[in-house]
Image 1 (tube, rainbow, N blue to C red):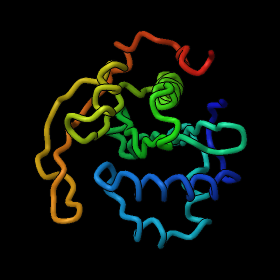
Image 2: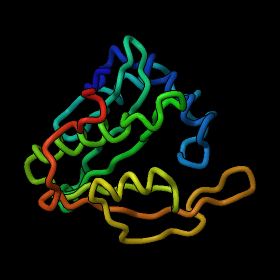
Image 3: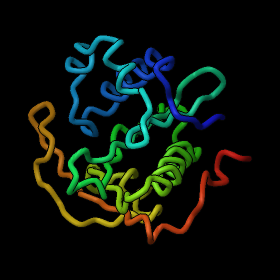
Image 4: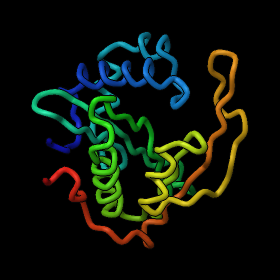
Length: 179
């Protein structure tokens, strides 16, 4: 398996996996399938254009994109010490193999190299395996939002989490994918 930053050339693979994420786990994402489908491929390609403050990391099994997550630094001057992790998803057949952990560790490794970036925030459905993964990486809950997402006549509560980069002790991709 290969972990790397996605580029504009990966737009179609990203579009396909992101759609699968929204269909498979609608309670985990604020974006709907209809909103996703309304975006032209060129818009998605622009979203994948890397900058020092924004990137998407993917995991490939052969030529197939099987996992994704993005990081976006806040654009406002007074908030540039923060970034947001978004869109974390691993194809169901590859879950439990360390893919999400490896992607997140690569994001954190890159984030630590961004000048002036001090913390990473994220929102996650309360009580999920994703929440447990984030905690194992050093993220801490700093808030709870009841009824954060409304999906099919039900609500999802979310925990707001933060990772302070100066307290983060690991240096890169874990052993899960090296074996």
